[in-house]
Image 1 (spheres, rainbow over the protein chains, first blue to last red):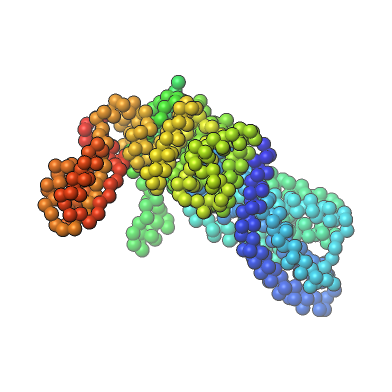
Image 2 (cartoon, chains in turn purple, orange):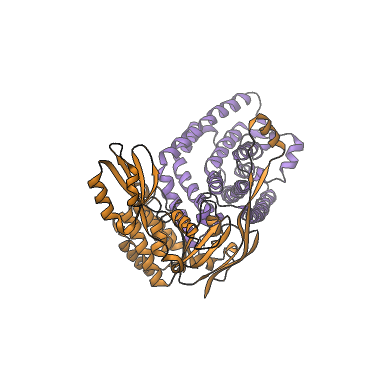
Length: 264
Length: 328
């Protein structure tokens, strides 16, 4: 049963390596804006020791880890899902005993592994350049941090897969994707820590899934959370994933009733 | 035994109309004009196990919609369809394992990987054991003569090789029912014939049921034991092919370019003249007279060049209508 998805996982490996140069280039230049961001924070921190509870070391670490999470865990399969539905390419999956959802999940998983391998060099460079400022967590927090990343990966996948299913209903949904990216950048905390947002918004975000994609994880990493807060975060990651999965199931079923399998 | 059974199948599509002009575009911002078309109009039919059924009809007659309903890709608005006892749209695993699909205009092979990689994925998807996989793959690739190309990237294969590999990918799990939508499109005569012969022997060996749409007349003529003819979403003929086959004459089109203007009317003694231009003529010639006619024309006229084209299933339909073989 799992063997078929293991094969999908392996194939995604082979496929990415066909375009390895493309991916490497994308990653290297993806880290460039980070240099500007870090210098910006350096200049902001000249007078103060901490801003909103963050020291300059925490802030630099925050920015680097946020960038790493985005680079490695942000899905990119939604473009392909959109394409499959729009062009009728989806048909070749529907007529086989394989789950489309799981297919892309394992494909995506393979991609994440490749991304980890390919980003080791640029990440090391960034960390070396910020040597005096980059913090290392204790073992306990590191363990929770890694677990939280698994939650992030699943939650990310659910969000993007759900939005890509809108392709059943709208011909052109790239603007949805871009909107989602902008909203996520702000609300996940990958641009700035969520502590910097206005309080009212902050309280709302606590219940939304987005903050548990990046902000939550880095706060574990930086040892800023109590054990109970970590547990609360895991619970939210879990229930949001579950909730989105239910929505996916519903949308998928309705979408298939509407699907016209265009092309051939 | 009926392996496929459809009752009162109806499927409508809504098409958005694009209105012309600025005013039209502005109007469509608020209200879009939709036109309802009926692709399948209350059709019922049955297909026996172990038959090869040709599904023919003009463009837009509903062939694709019907195939897509049978494999569960689209859901009919009304009516019921059972394939091997399953409702296709439920996409039950055991149903999906018993069908195979070849779409000539779509590929399931990975462009950047070798066909062999796709076969390995299919092995896992269909849960085929190692021995059976090896045996099947050997058998199919030898029969279709593609053993040498199995490990080259698909992008480097010729169209014929790719089509044959597509066929292998769809047959590794030995489906009981095989749906083929234009399986020979774009292939040369020899490759077309190879695939036809192969399909014939596959059907015989497995007592499989094949449902075929094809633009090429020989695909239909040589393979199919039964015909379903669709017109405007309705079935106008559903019976054994042999009932009308003897009335159908096989012929070819001869497309001739003359080097000087001649009295083309004389050519009508060889066959029906389908089209005349200044220097070219298209003649419809009976299959068994091709050889003598070509040599005759070459001898008596000064000709620049000529080519022969096969008749299409569209011609077949037109003949059937013209001969009043069925009531429409």
